[in-house]
Structures are given as structure tokens and as C-alpha cells.
Length: 169
Image (cartoon, rainbow, N blue to C red; front, top):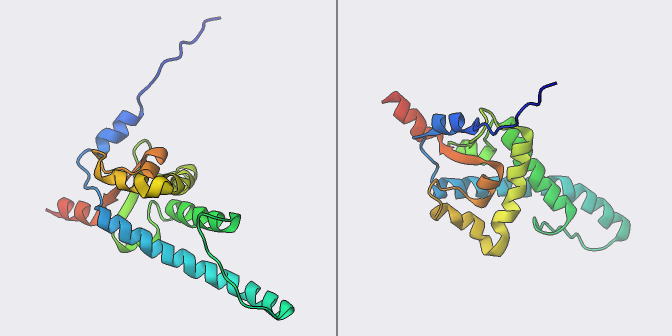
């Protein structure tokens, strides 16, 4: 019986080489896409929460209180992760905000984002928000303009509009 040797294979290198020269999304486009998505998350939250709040208000006769804090409470965290994770996966790297800004999340290690990578990236937003948002600001110091959540999920954000224009030229 022979023993198989375990060796490291740099399979990610082929994917990274394929992405070489791909135009990256600007911080401005990424920030606008994120803001659009946050507004949509808030709209969904209100649409789901108001009927329950109205029902409880009718039963208790008290004030109508809605609170959305993405950094507090299980519901808010689940809503954010589901929105950003599932929509990034289903949208093949694009949430509605990213689609509007013509940008896309792509994996640096796989041809297609998996559901796990999309969820991992969504969870990584919390890591980027730590320490006053320094994880988002790392866009400006990282050589490939990757934020903390990009590095956690092994992704980059590309500018599809510039990519299309370059292909047409």
C-alpha cells in the first residue's frame, strides 16, 4: 500500500491570472451601490415590520415604535446577511445597488461566487465596519483596492461598464 503525498496546488493562480488587468470599481461607485442597498434593506424592513407593529399597537394601545439598527439585534443582522449574501449569490455578484452602478463582485479563486462566499462577504461587512469603518477605508491603501470583507471572502469588485467599453474598443 503506497502513501500518497500531500502537496499544495496553487489552483487559485489560474483564476488570479485570468483577472489580471480587469478594471476595478471606484470607491464612489461602491459606496453609492452600498447606500442604495441599505435603503432597500430599510424599505424591506419597514414593509415587514409595520404590519406587526400596527397589530401590537392595536392590542396594547401604545405608541408605534420601529427600530432598525444593523449592528444590534438578531433580526437586523439576519436581514442584512440574507439581503447582501443571497442577492449577491442569486445576482451572480450583483445586488440591486451594484447592478444600478454597473459593478460586480467576482471571486479571486473560483469562476463563480458560491453561496458560502456571498454569505461570508456579507458577514465581512461587520468586520469592515469595526473601528470606525477602517475596513472600508482600506480600499485606499490596498494595492488592489480590496476592503476587509473582500479579503475575507476572496473577492474583488469590478467595473463592468469599463470592462465592456474596453472589450468594445
